Image 1: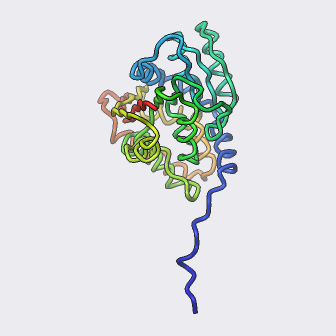
Image 2: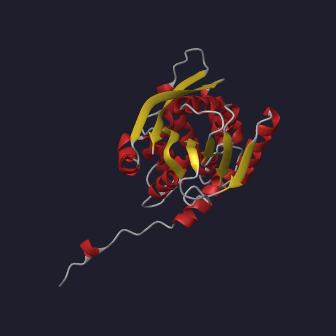
Image 3: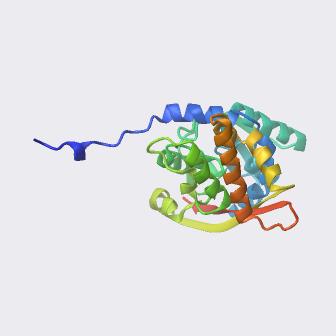
Length: 277
């Protein structure tokens, strides 16, 4: 008898189905309520990239526009994309309030609707890292960037606060089979494998964004209400299991919290990346 068990090939994930579920998750709640607190990371990335006025910038999975607005403040020609229209609409309202010129376009980060070698700079802060087909998304960033142009990203690391939060969520909601954690983008191994062969230079630096909230419970209440992935996780659980998740998250915050006055001051590591094509 022939043993065929070793000939079974792993099933390719259905990325379209996964992305549809992701769109629903990110469209639920109101990510902009927490996303705007990360503005400083967009400013820091634009400085690390040494953006010059007049250069073209594509923000991929731009969400509520932190990096887009930062680039526009430096008088760059910015196109901001995302596959969630409500996030783009919020970003546009922010740009209009600040008198900034940004073009908006709904787009899938894994199939960007732009020609090869189109942009001087391609950026993403805590956005493209959530694509399910990670290698395809990385290829798209490289494809639309001009030779000699720069690709800049800010991605949560596996061992940081948000990376650990992803692990906790994964204990309650199993991630799609064959799809890596978003925090894989925050590793040098991923960068070397996906960008190394196609870029002339990659610089990465460990940075920390600090979550500052009234208390750990305040953070949990806001994120459980407005942060789509956590909101949808709680919605899928019964009351007792949801209470256990709350306890696990609060314990995680306690482990990282630097404050001793009842507030929350939690540094979360991310990798700031600037690659030259």
